[in-house]
Length: 323
Image (tube, rainbow, N blue to C red):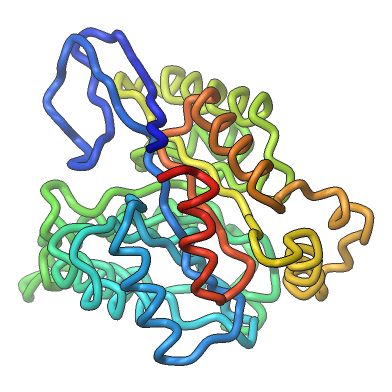
């Protein structure tokens, strides 16, 4: 059994755990959570989708994630998929990784997220960001201008909705109310210092998605320290939750599996072939090294991104990690 721990000897500090905002302790010992993503960009049908929900919920994974991409033939609608996962699972925390908020209506998205939180019994974490590709905005008719400012305003609107503040004066609030006290935990998909400072105003933590194909524990650790420092500079006294993600492949020929997936995944964006070929996200040894490195870097939740819809990747991953 592989156990991954972060140990923080901190007095009266709030630490994010299974219940997220827990009572303060003088010594906290937390296992690094490992969340398994759905094979979001790999074609699958109803039976395959349900099998993945159930396979992830059987464990030992701490969470089930899916990421947001409108313009891709294999991806499913984010909130619909999370609602189905909420109904088909009982244990794992559900993650959006990362929902592109500025292409959405804030009130409707807040209602959908709250509905998922109720369906799951309070197991939803929302990763939010502006996305990496303009095509998502062009496809949905959302403006490209002032995306970051719009996201900040949308988060404020969503939090008011979850606090049952009516969006229209002298009218009903938007329901349902989330199960989780204080609303649904929010993780910001941001990187730079200015974006971290903005996120510190509303997020519970940060998702570092920049090392998914080339996992570098030293750089991940440096990013975590930047996030911690950004929280302090913004006047926050809590420790920010910090998560990262990693593509992995464990099939009969992991290198070929990874390469074929990344070529398709990155095809519209003109990514250099040498960049894809240099990715180390293949094979059991590299997966073990990345998980160990994430632990040492202080990652609270590592999201594993499969590169195939073959359900056998779940037992392969369990075997590779000894869990």
